[in-house]
Amino acid sequence: YNATPATRQKTLLILNQGAHFHSIGSFTRSMDQFIDLYHSIAHPDDLLFFRSAVPGHKGCFDHKNVSIPDMTHDNFLELHATNDYDWNLFDEYNTIAKQKLEQIRLVNGMQHVYYLNVYNMTVLRHDAHVSANDC
Image (tube, rainbow, N blue to C red):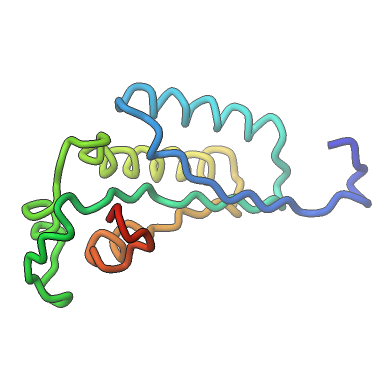
Protein backbone atom coordinates (compact mmCIF):
# COMPACT_ATOMS: atom_id res chain seq x y z
CA TYR A 1 0.00 0.00 0.00
CA ASN A 2 1.68 3.11 -1.20
CA ALA A 3 -1.44 5.22 -1.18
CA THR A 4 -1.72 8.18 1.10
CA PRO A 5 -4.54 8.18 3.66
CA ALA A 6 -6.45 10.64 1.48
CA THR A 7 -6.33 8.41 -1.61
CA ARG A 8 -6.44 4.96 -0.03
CA GLN A 9 -9.67 2.99 -0.37
CA LYS A 10 -10.98 0.07 1.65
CA THR A 11 -9.88 -3.43 0.78
CA LEU A 12 -12.30 -6.35 0.89
CA LEU A 13 -10.79 -9.79 1.56
CA ILE A 14 -12.91 -12.94 1.54
CA LEU A 15 -11.16 -16.22 2.24
CA ASN A 16 -11.34 -19.80 3.38
CA GLN A 17 -8.50 -22.22 3.85
CA GLY A 18 -9.75 -25.32 5.62
CA ALA A 19 -10.14 -27.97 2.95
CA HIS A 20 -6.49 -28.27 1.97
CA PHE A 21 -4.96 -29.12 5.34
CA HIS A 22 -4.49 -32.53 6.84
CA SER A 23 -3.67 -31.79 10.46
CA ILE A 24 -4.70 -29.36 13.19
CA GLY A 25 -1.09 -28.23 13.51
CA SER A 26 -0.69 -27.31 9.83
CA PHE A 27 -4.00 -25.46 9.84
CA THR A 28 -3.08 -23.54 13.00
CA ARG A 29 0.35 -22.59 11.60
CA SER A 30 -1.25 -21.37 8.40
CA MET A 31 -3.78 -19.27 10.33
CA ASP A 32 -0.95 -17.77 12.39
CA GLN A 33 0.99 -16.95 9.20
CA PHE A 34 -2.11 -15.38 7.69
CA ILE A 35 -2.71 -13.25 10.79
CA ASP A 36 0.91 -12.04 10.79
CA LEU A 37 0.64 -11.11 7.11
CA TYR A 38 -2.74 -9.49 7.60
CA HIS A 39 -1.40 -7.34 10.44
CA SER A 40 1.47 -6.20 8.24
CA ILE A 41 -0.73 -4.95 5.41
CA ALA A 42 -4.22 -4.27 6.79
CA HIS A 43 -5.66 -0.89 7.57
CA PRO A 44 -8.38 -0.20 10.16
CA ASP A 45 -11.12 0.30 7.53
CA ASP A 46 -10.36 -2.89 5.57
CA LEU A 47 -12.98 -5.63 5.56
CA LEU A 48 -12.09 -9.27 6.21
CA PHE A 49 -14.59 -12.11 5.80
CA PHE A 50 -13.50 -15.66 6.60
CA ARG A 51 -15.81 -18.45 5.42
CA SER A 52 -15.99 -21.64 7.47
CA ALA A 53 -14.78 -24.93 5.98
CA VAL A 54 -17.50 -27.39 5.05
CA PRO A 55 -17.10 -31.16 4.69
CA GLY A 56 -18.90 -33.30 2.16
CA HIS A 57 -21.41 -36.00 2.97
CA LYS A 58 -20.00 -39.51 2.84
CA GLY A 59 -22.52 -41.84 1.25
CA CYS A 60 -24.84 -38.99 0.35
CA PHE A 61 -26.18 -40.91 -2.64
CA ASP A 62 -27.31 -43.72 -0.33
CA HIS A 63 -30.60 -41.87 0.31
CA LYS A 64 -30.65 -42.24 4.08
CA ASN A 65 -34.13 -40.71 4.26
CA VAL A 66 -33.57 -38.12 6.94
CA SER A 67 -35.88 -35.18 6.41
CA ILE A 68 -34.40 -31.71 6.42
CA PRO A 69 -36.07 -30.72 9.75
CA ASP A 70 -34.74 -33.89 11.40
CA MET A 71 -31.16 -33.46 10.15
CA THR A 72 -29.38 -32.23 13.24
CA HIS A 73 -25.62 -31.89 13.55
CA ASP A 74 -25.53 -35.13 15.55
CA ASN A 75 -27.46 -36.90 12.77
CA PHE A 76 -25.03 -35.51 10.22
CA LEU A 77 -22.07 -36.89 12.17
CA GLU A 78 -23.77 -40.27 12.60
CA LEU A 79 -24.75 -40.60 8.93
CA HIS A 80 -21.99 -38.84 7.01
CA ALA A 81 -18.93 -38.38 9.22
CA THR A 82 -15.70 -39.82 7.83
CA ASN A 83 -11.96 -39.47 8.06
CA ASP A 84 -11.87 -39.33 4.25
CA TYR A 85 -10.29 -36.10 3.06
CA ASP A 86 -9.79 -35.24 6.75
CA TRP A 87 -13.35 -33.93 6.87
CA ASN A 88 -13.43 -34.99 10.51
CA LEU A 89 -11.04 -32.12 11.29
CA PHE A 90 -13.23 -29.35 9.87
CA ASP A 91 -15.12 -28.66 13.11
CA GLU A 92 -11.79 -28.01 14.84
CA TYR A 93 -10.47 -25.94 11.92
CA ASN A 94 -13.54 -23.73 12.16
CA THR A 95 -13.16 -23.34 15.93
CA ILE A 96 -9.53 -22.31 15.51
CA ALA A 97 -10.35 -19.86 12.73
CA LYS A 98 -13.15 -18.27 14.73
CA GLN A 99 -10.87 -17.85 17.77
CA LYS A 100 -8.04 -16.37 15.70
CA LEU A 101 -10.39 -13.90 14.01
CA GLU A 102 -11.79 -12.86 17.38
CA GLN A 103 -8.21 -12.24 18.47
CA ILE A 104 -7.74 -9.88 15.52
CA ARG A 105 -10.89 -8.02 16.49
CA LEU A 106 -10.29 -7.76 20.22
CA VAL A 107 -6.53 -7.57 20.59
CA ASN A 108 -5.77 -5.53 17.52
CA GLY A 109 -8.91 -3.41 17.45
CA MET A 110 -9.81 -4.24 13.85
CA GLN A 111 -13.59 -4.20 14.02
CA HIS A 112 -14.26 -5.15 10.38
CA VAL A 113 -13.35 -8.83 10.75
CA TYR A 114 -16.19 -11.30 10.25
CA TYR A 115 -16.58 -15.06 10.48
CA LEU A 116 -19.13 -16.41 7.99
CA ASN A 117 -20.57 -19.63 9.35
CA VAL A 118 -21.85 -21.50 6.30
CA TYR A 119 -21.08 -24.86 7.94
CA ASN A 120 -24.42 -25.27 9.71
CA MET A 121 -26.56 -24.64 6.66
CA THR A 122 -24.52 -26.86 4.34
CA VAL A 123 -23.79 -29.94 6.45
CA LEU A 124 -27.48 -30.32 7.16
CA ARG A 125 -28.37 -30.42 3.44
CA HIS A 126 -26.66 -33.21 1.51
CA ASP A 127 -28.78 -32.22 -1.48
CA ALA A 128 -27.38 -28.68 -1.48
CA HIS A 129 -24.04 -29.59 -3.03
CA VAL A 130 -23.66 -28.48 -6.63
CA SER A 131 -21.61 -31.39 -7.97
CA ALA A 132 -23.46 -34.39 -9.35
CA ASN A 133 -20.68 -36.83 -8.43
CA ASP A 134 -19.29 -35.59 -5.13
CA CYS A 135 -21.55 -34.53 -2.31
